Image 1 (tube, one colour):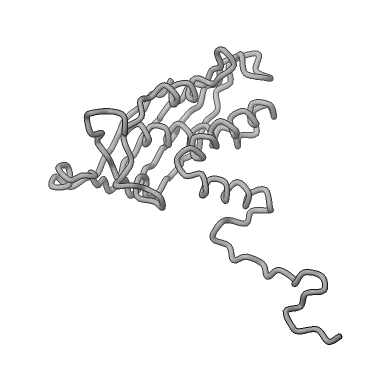
Image 2 (cartoon, rainbow, N blue to C red):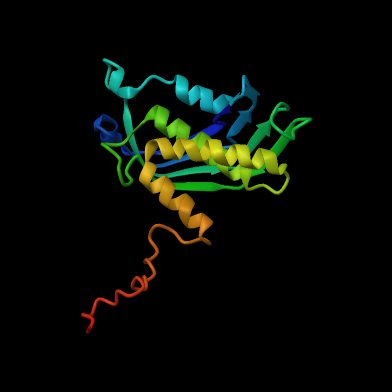
Length: 192
């Protein structure tokens, strides 16, 4: 389902023993994501659901903070079986850079390796969904499923981002527009 290609990593030796491990940069050259549907669900969604919860394991998972995670010259291969796909579609993915993986808002001491893998898969699927070469049905399925991955990790942040996109590109960091007072309620006392 996911092939990472060549991996370049920049980390200080002393940080390999820290918890979480701090990685300055991680570059995936030519990552390949294969997306197919079986039994009504996408393979990467089933894989995410099948991964054990880190908290339930008796062994403490390795946790990472990655300052910059780059994916270069990636490809997403979509197999027939998804709505609107009759033959295999290969979508080249432009370079992607993710910042502060495992260190963002809501992170608890870094991200488990499985969460980093899910972030890579979701980023590749979202980038493929933006391609002009995909049928609208496939774009919708990919956007929904890739969005669900980020929704599971940070519900408030994912929803704010999606709502901002729907409202014309406003993001959660944009200042809120002042709201007019409710009809008949100006805040000043009324004379009777």
